[in-house]
Length: 107
Image 1 (cartoon, one colour):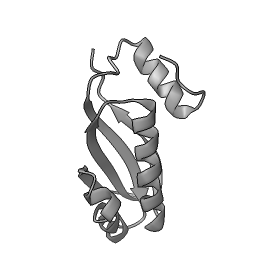
Image 2 (spheres, helix red, strand yellow; image 1 turned 90 degrees about the vertical axis):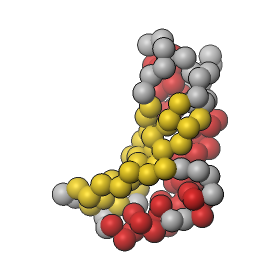
Image 3 (cartoon, one colour; image 1 turned 180 degrees about the horizontal axis):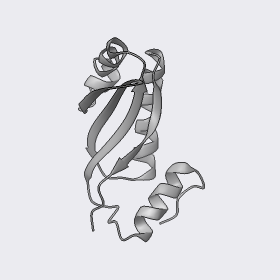
Image 4 (cartoon, one colour; image 1 turned 180 degrees about the vertical axis):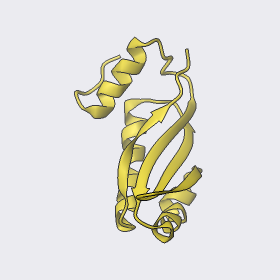
């Protein structure tokens, strides 16, 4: 497959090179960092998040709160990038920041 020359394209190229079957649906984890539990909880209650069928893991850390938004999807460039953009807009509203994405390989 052809992928754009950016961070998501680089990750997808590595996945494909390592034998990952990128046409098979799986859980994709989108990572975010927040300064407070209140901000993280507000994010996971946001309309864009709740209406799109995400599940969440919310974990308090020494430096704040980590949130993983999990959604089953086929890991295409467009799916990943659109989801990051949509969630990124919401996370910024609550003072958080995106921290990448990942998934378990399907071979």
